[in-house]
Structure formats: structure tokens, C-alpha cells
Length: 268
Image 1 (tube, one colour):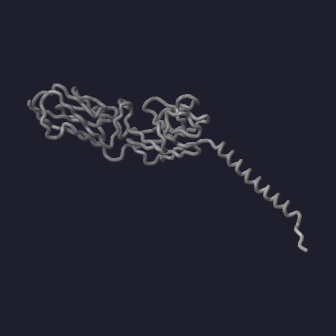
Image 2 (cartoon, rainbow, N blue to C red):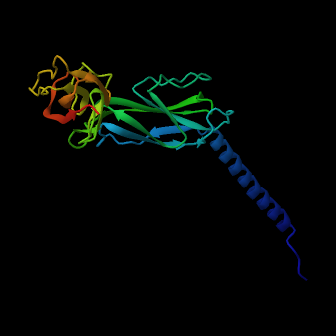
Image 3 (cartoon, rainbow, N blue to C red):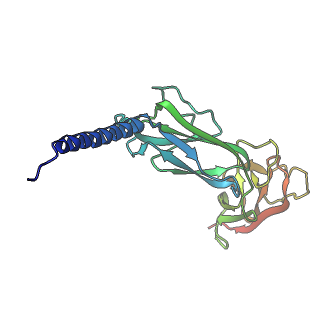
């Protein structure tokens, strides 16, 4: 006669109960872990090789979803990044995390390119924010101070307009130029020189001074950070229009960079 172990059903029930308990416990632990994981952001851009001009800052984001919903209703765990340069990061809860104009950029992706970054030391920061640009309850911020080198390549300057050989009459002459491998910096005019940074000096009917260490100024020269210059009341006849790249203190570069265009202005 075959008999069945009366304890087997009980053992099976205990095993199933234990498996259910373990699974439930694992789910609870996972949920708790996800709930307690704080949003994080880290700048991953390496300092080595950064050159003045366009500088791209990249970041890694964890436990936070980036969405393109700036200005919309806040949604916990979602938002975007504010990128900062050379400014303290605003981090007061339920206040805007936007800094003064020119020191921040907003993006819903993990990289942002700063334009016209000057050579020297700069502090780049990033912050995860809500849709309304306010900091998270526990601010997620990261900063990195780096030394940005001069632009790669030799600086040069090109007169774009007037075009070479243009037939122009006397009066107002509009001059525009293009700069390569050089950062025009308005804020740093008159301060310490940094390689690859400076401004322009425009000349009319003069030989631009290029003496080392001596300001390249003349009685009629015009110092500017603008790539356009209007010369007014220019008389009929032959003239020379010149532009020079100079250091922050108005002195010529180590290797002077000057461009000159002769124009014969004739009444039409």
C-alpha cells in the first residue's frame, strides 16, 4: 500500500511562502533604493587641450531625467541643466537658479558650448533644475576650474568688405573684418595681456605702428572690439584702410598681425 507523506504539502507551502517573502522583500528594497537615490551631475570635460574660443562642457547625469520642458509645470525627477561660467551658482530652493546674462546657458542635453571663451582660468559649473529653473530640494551641482589655453593656430585678420577692387565713391566707407584664431575681449581691454586675446585698432591713411611693447595708437586710430567700422566723410582719391590685432594693452602681438587695403574713391 502506497502512503503519502502528510508533511509534504506543508513543506511546499512553507517554501512557497519563503520565496514569496524574499521576492516581496527584494521589490521593497529596490523601490526604497530608487526612492532614496539622489539626482547627481558631474562635469566630465577634461582640462587638457582646452583652447580659447568655443569651449564645450559635457556632463554625466544620474537618477534624473532630462526633458525639454522649460517653463512648464514641475515634474519631480525631471528637468534640465543650467550651465554656468565664472559666477556663483544660485541654489536657493524655490528661487530661480538663473544668474546674470552672459554667465549661464540652459540645455536639456548633456553638453553646452560657450562661445568666445578667453584664455586663462575659468570656473565652469552645472546644476540640475526643475522645469521652472529652480534648484532641486537637494541641490545637484558640480564645478570645475580649468586653465584655458590660447586659440590653436596663428591669429589672422581678413577684410571682408569692401571687396578687393570695389569701386566706391567718397563719403562713408563701411569696413568689416573676419578674425581667426584670436579672441576679441571687450571686458579685458586695458588689463593684463593673455596670449590669443585682445582687440582691434583701425587706421585710415596711416602706417600701423608695430614697435614691440609700445601701444599701436596714432592720432587718428580707432580702438574697438567691433568687427565693423564706419569711416565718415572720406574724401575723393586714394586711401589706405588698415586693421591691426593688438593685446589688451594696445601693444602689437609678438608677431604683428596687420592687414591693409588700398582704395581709390571716385565720384560716381
